[in-house]
Image 1 (cartoon, rainbow, N blue to C red):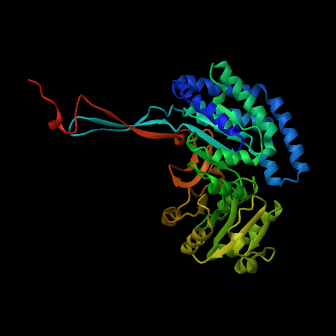
Image 2 (tube, rainbow, N blue to C red):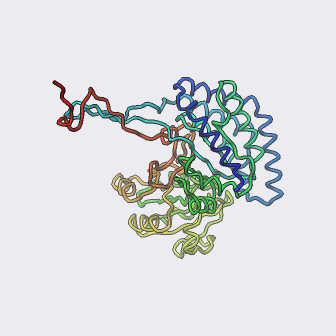
Image 3 (cartoon, rainbow, N blue to C red):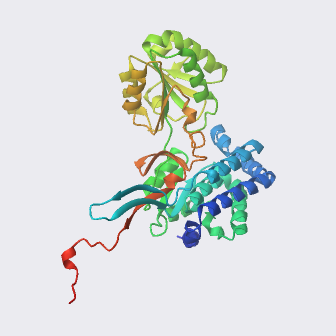
Length: 424
């Protein structure tokens, strides 16, 4: 291996103390300055993004990937706004999450500290360059960013803004390090750096996640695929269900919190499905359904088991009519990806049974799947949506990029008093 990524990681780790020892106001000021640079240099960022978009279209990238790649004035402004929101949040470092005085008088505290050096490996999403950096810095970490080759110009332009802010605050640029060479060998090198990198977070397609998980020697939190379900219960308000269905599937189909499967209780399927088909077809959604679905809505194509496990990231929806809540939960358990599930119901008991019966990172009761997003849930931004049940689960904000350690405060207590040396 070239050693190129090791050198970047070493410099990023060396920058760690400069970030970890900043006080809360200084880290807030740094991130606010980054947001200012993004707004100031938005024309340059968008020009770089146009270069990436042109190259992506020529390469035949899918509409879903191009949508995630695209930046415009609105999206750059939203990235800057997200950084301001992260900056304004309470400082997670030094928070005492628990304090207990033991019988011997020793005070035991659990205190939040930074994780260290975090590696982000991501595809097509240039917003991640800024948002991941801000979240890592807010939590006192440094970050090594490896974006996809399809966004290399956009990522470089955004990283330039971040580096300008670091310089102006008298901090090392290496605190936010970008792997600018897109060669795949550098990802392999990064994943072997267990002596330098404390955590790797891959964010992208299923192929990327599997590649990272299979080759990593560093700890990994996976942002896995989003096979998200909407279950329309027998006690659902059907107008509400229609609104949540259209918002979840058609508002932005190429994102991980978009709906991929609709489950409908048999008691309301006859009334709901024709209305749903009308709304979906009007928005260009292709529907693939089971036999019972197609008996009610013959416009639907035939669905097979592969369809129910698919993350389409496109205007395609799989539909199944189920006998009851238990069958809906069984379907989710078999085909879901632990990302987001939604129930529409006016029955409080059914809602609670659904919440208890699903194991996904987010469960929505009468609310759109599209709310499973760090910004929407009050995190300002997210570094990813963890579907790994270790350390963090669901959208990860700054607090998820810290870890608790024990701090013990005493007044000379020893565990074995008889071991004290007595003089005279």
